[in-house]
Image (spheres, rainbow, N blue to C red):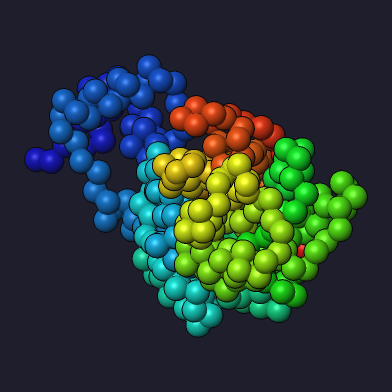
Amino acid sequence: MPVTMHDVAARAGVSVKTVSNVVNRYPHIRAETRERVQQAIDELGYRVNITARNLRTRRTGMITLAVPELSLAYFAELADLVIQAADARGYTVLIEQTSASRQREIDVLRGRQQRVTDGLIFSPLELGQDDIALFDVPFPLVVLGERVFGAPADHVTMNNVEAARAATQHLIELGRRRIAVVGAHPGEVVGSAGLRMRGYEQALADAGLPLDPALVGEAGPWHRKTGSDTMGALLDSGVEIDAVFALNDAMALGALHALHARRIDVPGDVALVGFDDVDDVRYSVPTITSVAPGREQIAATAVDLVLARIESDGNGTPVPFKRVVPDSSIIGRESTGDVPEGGGERVVGVQPGGEGDVGSPP
């Protein structure tokens, strides 16, 4: 006969409900009790009947994470962190790549995967404020990123304006005055590019520096190639540059390539700052100073929010949707001279985040 929860409960000297809570990774259980139950499970070889559990709870034990592009290091690292956070709560993650396709993003919100998963964490790229009605969905949803604000869903975003402002201010404090931007999207207001440009412009204004359009490098997709091409075009234009703020790390790596190709010393001639603090920037030459947007907190918070919606679905009074902004920090490295060559890294600035009700665009 197969081992049952009653067998485990009898061996551990606890109730069947306690065994169920341990199996389902309920967090509020004493460590001693959890260890005793787990020991009984191991000794008896108990295995959870996933099919029976899902039929009983009407849940699959899975959530979907939909992101634009896994080839970008930021989204790959975010996905890894979401998987870890979900696994710690007993959930599996199904990854869906939307490939920056508007139709694929619409399909995600229409619940194409909701027959096999319980909730959705969604980072849109092509959908925007005009599409907000599409986010009114009949399943637990957490929105990531900066494309849509005020949707009827929990929202985890970045401290874009303040972080970009602090990054630019850091370059100014290092004595740089001709600070180029790589990755601008002309006319964008809501979105990562628009918000980070706002922070850049605010820092210049605070320092009494003019905004020179010749220093603003436009780019399409935020990839290494666009960063290299945009940086090369700025340098070839003859405009004077002594620092670069790349609006993400992929473009910062591309910009560094273009600077190296022209034998421009970094940070001696041109200092460089990126955004996202992906793992690659720790291994470039020189290592690249970058804004760390709180990716670990973004992943953990998104998982906590979607699971809270799943586990409370249909129970009690509806809870207001939240917007959560993690703390961000600037990690100083060799590309700004914040550490000597081969000297590691250090935090050179912190911008606190916050939490509140979902509202209108910032």
